[in-house]
Image (tube, rainbow, N blue to C red; front, side, top):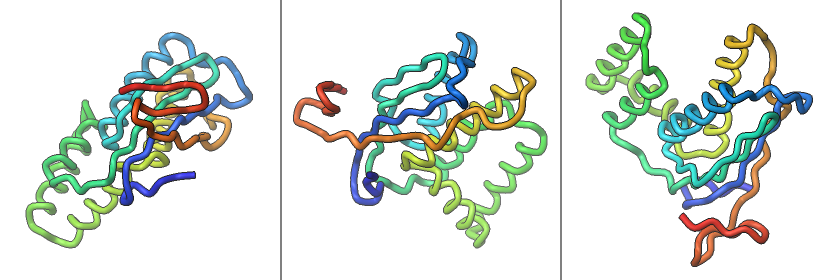
Length: 173
């Protein structure tokens, strides 16, 4: 079950497993995943309430606010988050994006729509996080192929006057 971000705020308990249940996530991998978790959350405009990373899976309790449309300056700031050490090509691409946004051309609106589709949505957040981490992990460990077993699982968490209730657990932000 998923609440449309256009309708309102929602919280989710998301979990995903490493392929075949292998215990591939060592301390270094866990730290990289932790950093990417916060980075992708900021890019997507979602809030990580808490998380747990084990050697073969991870959990994240995520709050997705009601979707808003940030100004172009904020979209560009978030875009730059995903490219902290841009290559020459990425710098040129960013300059081209800035120019087309300022010109008001249709290409600027198309870029804006593509970026907004990645923001304020639990599915887009998890997809981006898992993709970015898998690329790093495979490169760092000289491997290829899938890293995660399947699509992530998520459970919609009910808000309460004391926080978010999940089973017998209560999280207070």
